[in-house]
Length: 257
Image 1 (spheres, rainbow, N blue to C red):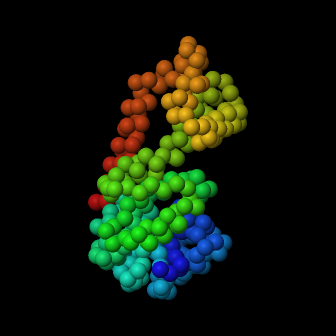
Image 2 (cartoon, rainbow, N blue to C red):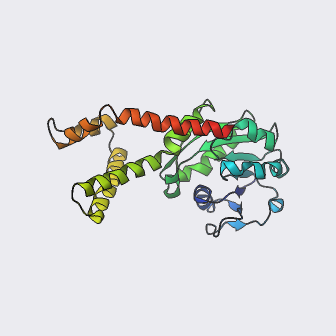
Image 3 (cartoon, rainbow, N blue to C red):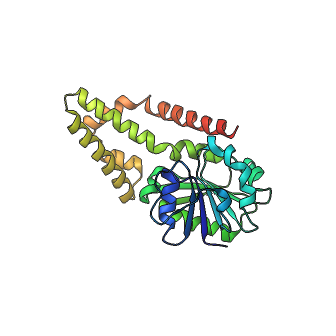
């Protein structure tokens, strides 16, 4: 299997993967909309110039897939691995484009991959060999953790939970900033407090072996301020999280068409 990798799409997520790969692979990229590519990545002006790539990573927006689909079959060879990080495009549609016997892996990373702290979930097509599965491990390992799924249907929930998840945490932090300002803090102070609390809590959760429920209990004294704040969440936070994930999962299924 060739170490030559072709990125079709090299935006934020594709660029993060490409940046991690240049140390061990020759990486080509086709993305007419990318003003700059990561250092070491070679730009292609046409997909027709891509020859002999062992791995082809599909990192365009799902709405753009139809424009590149007609060219995929010509790019692949008997040992080519197609790795898609597009939300909502199922293995059947990918196989229609790449070939019925093509080796295809669908993966859903998230944006912390850009700093090596992401998590991806992946599902292979029947044609994927153990060596190709190991290649996906090597490709995605620098971006963070990787989970292999048994069912492709689980990817809609993965997309809604971890794929979209960073935006939920950012949005909640924005809400905390606004709430702090309503309590009299200036914007800069509220922002610094909320951002560092968000960052510190994430690092604590990573460093400690205790479960999230135990970490929550450790900061919650009976009758204290944290208990009062958590009490205001009860009855609403679980319902809201359910609505958020259901909406994102439904959109992922809709993209599959």
